[in-house]
Image (cartoon, rainbow, N blue to C red; front, side):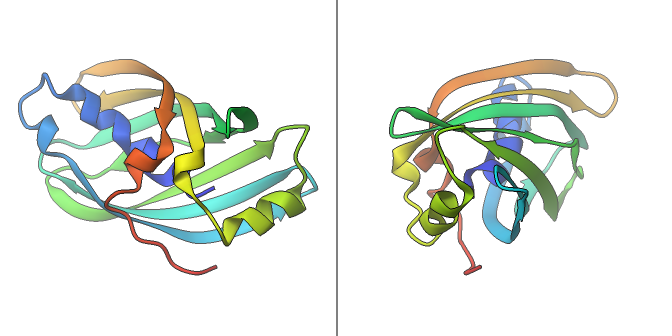
Length: 157
């Protein structure tokens, strides 16, 4: 479930046509908490270190589907996230994930210890709004999750 933290911030990288936005960098990603919600969902909290040399960015309407080894793993959504402008900051990202009907929460919890992002892909939809104006709906499909984790670090749960 660690994939969600970097995904919320990756959308800002799509604004490469705007001066300075290509310099936004996700420096690290840490799973801070994970807890079951009933038998078919879980909440996860992430801390994402973001170097944002431009204006404040609001990422909203975050939702998507995660696929594991080609099959649907689950659906996720997150409340809006604000990335402070002209700073290096830790951004809190809280995610609620509902598991696919074919999975149990126990299967997912056992997978957390041997997490391999190369086995996951994701479809994500979100809206990116730059303070002062620019707003864009972003839809990404079939993204390999391992590309988001090349520069991230993890903590044991």
